[in-house]
Length: 276
Image 1 (cartoon, helix red, strand yellow):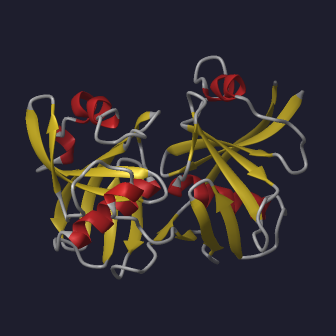
Image 2 (cartoon, rainbow, N blue to C red):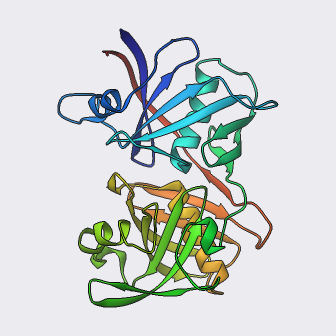
Image 3 (cartoon, helix red, strand yellow):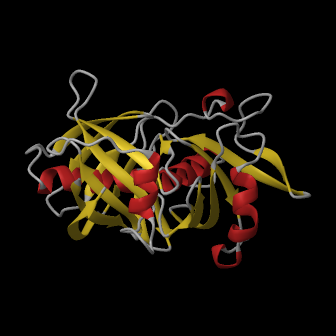
């Protein structure tokens, strides 16, 4: 079947977005791997599927697949691209869009300047809900990694994140420690690994090694998790600019019991068809 797609990115974190409402097709892991292959396919970090919702009072179902074919719970940069896509394709005329994901319901809003504001929901800090093996909830935890001990924050933004504080993200051991921590036994569903440099109370720099993908140019849920971790530890204010290799996001989190609000761009690159 010839399947129409749109290539998009959020700060360089790139996606292939597929409308499975007007096109009828069941994506399988081998299809995802073909689409995501940067040599023999289209190439992307993740494939995003737009589907009819399964829950009442929701506009769409948003499904996220890593390049190796696994489905994941949440993707912040993808959510912004999703919002732009359904508006640009006239699948909805709403500016405020309610979307069902594997990680829960999220609210998307397309602003007049074309930036997208995403209500990412309340962060989860309870280790059992991340999930993360720990005796009790804490602002930070000691994590043994390859013979080294790191103090880390642990947060779920619908998907699990661990945040390490480093002096400089440019020299951070992302390539060395990222794959090891991703599969650390204390994270039973694996984990996204953030390396955060605190520049000021309202400004951080961040690199993220994403679960099932590797390091990406940007990670929206990773930016949210880093901001939340910094606020919980008392090192950041409630509104933070997060600089990632692909660009910057604005993250706002007033504190416990409140949702995380992420604002940033979403860009269309090109459209096409692929034979599956």
